[in-house]
Length: 376
Image 1: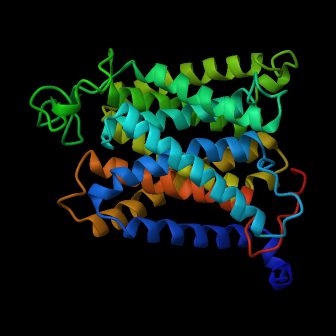
Image 2: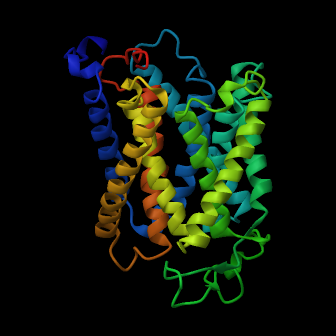
């Protein structure tokens, strides 16, 4: 199939290559979403969907697509193999989580745990570089990192409390007080014995964890500044520990600004962070950090990237909201279903497709991605 690849100059240059990728991936994401009603979309489909993301992160960011080996396979057959592999693993994980932790029902708490597992996986593969398994074989390194992500996320998840749904109308001050969720009298009371009942309200737990993840990507765009100024820090596990602490502190500050000072409902603030990260990930995966990497001053390039990410996230919020509202209908598209439907579309479907299309498929049927030019 390599002989059928287009050869026009735009296919290997930004922003045209990125625009092609965005058009293809968003088209796939919208088509997938349009195939479901709200109940199915936020039910078993979400469980299967979110279970594919951690293994995808391990294969792409952790192992750089080197396992399972596709050496010698022409494009796009290697990508087919890797995609099929991660989907099989993701389906098995989803089946295990739903049946062993949620009594066979894809209820919201199991989806929240899946989201937290994705966040933990990001930290393990980016902040820690798959340490302490980075010296092992690719298979051991990947699967042990994946297993660790699920264990750590499960332990952290025990701190969440699913008894109530705070601010059910999605605003502060709320006209409706907190209502039972998994607690007695709530719609999910039969599953109350399975859902965590820790000290942290689940909405705040999710929002804070995602705020921490947002700063992890901020440091990536900054090239790990200011930690890269200290060689002693840029080694594992020191870098992972320092990055995690920094992200947790900055995430807490962001939480207090957004939720306590600006009075934004935690789940809505969670969605706003998703929108920003959606824009940032679009620039990172589809556009290879263009145009920020073309700026001579790295700090100025990073600032430009953040500004563009905010603009793209702002646009995405209204586009995704309009699409989801039109497809699912006003009756189904109510808080908090609106948050999770949009979050699913942006980071549950679109981001994994971006990661797979850029890292595994390498923008096929376009030619292989050329090395990005030196910054500046």
